[in-house]
View 1 (cartoon, rainbow, N blue to C red):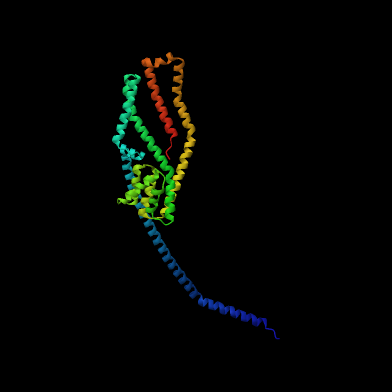
View 2: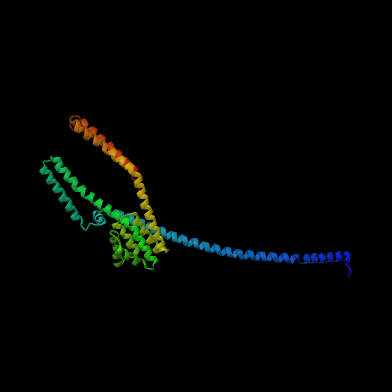
Length: 335
């Protein structure tokens, strides 16, 4: 075999390199122009995509703004209605309905008068003095029946709060299983536990006379003026206007109500020591005065017979009332 001359090989390589360089030099401008054109096309496409995304984002923001405004208007309307209903709940008729008592205000006043009259007769038979005969029946007839009514209202509301999250869970499961909200509420009104059963039955009856579900739920705060019921009415009203996942919203409300209940129990447990101390401190002056009177009656009677003793007892009562008021505000928490 004959070898190739290195010089010839070098000339061939140099010629190939020179040809490639010349070709690249001739095509360089075209290549760069194509690159710039492709880059401009990509930028235009990217700008169009970005413009579409910006428009979609702007539309979403506008939609969210409209929904937020609708929700705010709904909340303002519900707050106004709740404020008006709160004023109405102060009436005796509303309090009787909240306590679940099937009596009219006239009967309540009649029972109060009969109770005061019986107490008056007992005091006359016991031979009490005239101020006691006139003052105690009047105070008892006006105050004790209203205190009993307030106790019954509070007890019924506590029973309602005990069962209300369970009723919401029933509604959530019913909606997730395919039932409409009307049937879910009717199920609670039929199978629920009192007093939740009665309150949801009022919602069903309100629907039967032509009210919508949000309006019927908002009316439930008349008989049960609680924040939890107001939350439920707000959730139903917002969902009816703005839409959304109703089962998830009511499920979250049920969870919030259970957390509020746990927090109330925790606060109550933590404040029991302070309440016990307040009760002991408030009862201590009366206990000491009673013990001193039992051991040395003459030492205590001067407070009741001397004008200076009257002034001391009045001054002490005022300061003790202030102390009890301060302690009560320190150990009571609203959740």
